[in-house]
Image 1 (cartoon, helix red, strand yellow):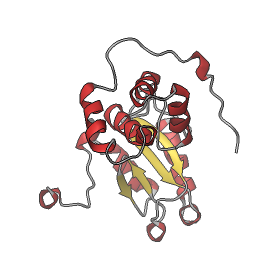
Image 2 (tube, helix red, strand yellow):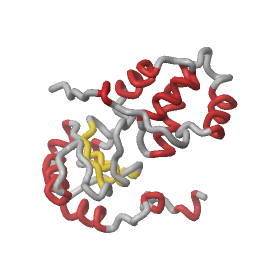
Image 3 (cartoon, one colour):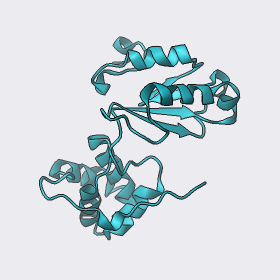
Length: 190
């Protein structure tokens, strides 16, 4: 596996409104500080909160989380860059995660990934120019019996074919918050 090198020394922290807002800090203080023995242990929940709010973790947020938790910014950046879950650059409104486990690969996940790459004119790890889609591969979605599989945002799609993935991508709403798992009866669930 090749190392991806980024020059983070040149990263600038934007001045302006704080990304780690007072209500977010209050939530971390009330919900997580009592549960963990140190402030450092609240790093992951703080990063999750930032990412779920903004869709990624800007350098300004790294700095603000570090200050709030009384850590060095490098410690927070080390944590954020260690986990694949965290995004240190903006991603598309729809994150397409194609499983590349052995079962999915044997059932045609490479064909699905290649089709999505051509359709969206992006490579794995890239985002479309309109910031609608980002394409990545994952090791396993735990859906081996219904391979090939992919997650689109948090919705699992199984038994994929080129035709099925086209239909899914073409039917996605403009607002990703309106995208729900079609296999769930949401009237019953709410």
